[in-house]
Length: 315
Image 1: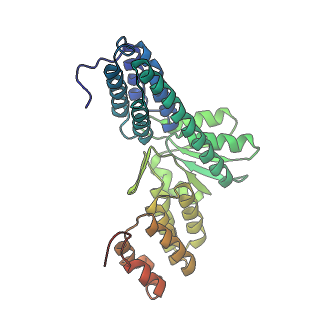
Image 2: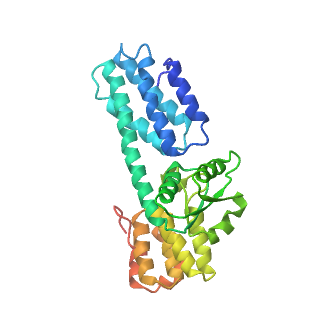
Image 3: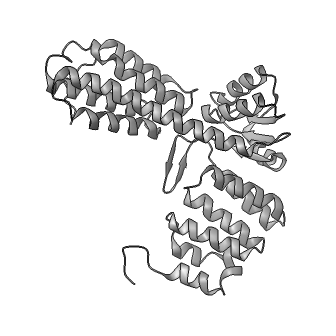
């Protein structure tokens, strides 16, 4: 437990305060700023004199960073990573050095992952595409800029993202690059989905129950299901596939793709996708009782999949 008498140095507290006040930057940008905080720990006068004090300072810094932006999972992971690595240090100055190095390494690995995500999104963005986005994700921004700089003509529809207007900030950046932008109110997003080729969102945190963001990929998946029920199977499959591609490990999003496939009459594809969704943790009883999957109910593989016990349990 962090002791109450730990006093962090003023530069450290000031940097953390800036992170707490930042309501415009995306998770990747916040993570970079947080990693840089650990480089400021040498300004703590007691950091290099006592190993216990050094470890408490590192822990207190991690806690303060998480409290600054509690919805951002990268900060939790960063703090845990740094604290775990500093436990191996044998001297006070080594604790502080290890904290700085491990924070930098964590960010570099995260940055590589973000670049891979951008590259994957870039594969989805074809020339002439109309893209809908909401809020301001630095990863989404990077993907759109990469597509534009690769010579692809895009039309981006961005919501204002009230009350802080993050969407306006993203739109201004893209417009400054010469891209075609349409700024819309959030209330128009449902209509914009029908005009978009696909939607790109960021996420501050992904959990087994879904994702945390101003608006997440669930809106796309739900819109796809509605379109399928209205007979727009082609549009529904397109939106659902893109949603599942962006959130490959989100059981709810993958499940909704299975629903769209089932409603469109593609039973084999629906079973393949449903198997994946259940493997990711989607509850079997929910699938078994879902009327949207009625077209699969008579299939033996559906009955087996939705009645077999979960791994590690017995019937």
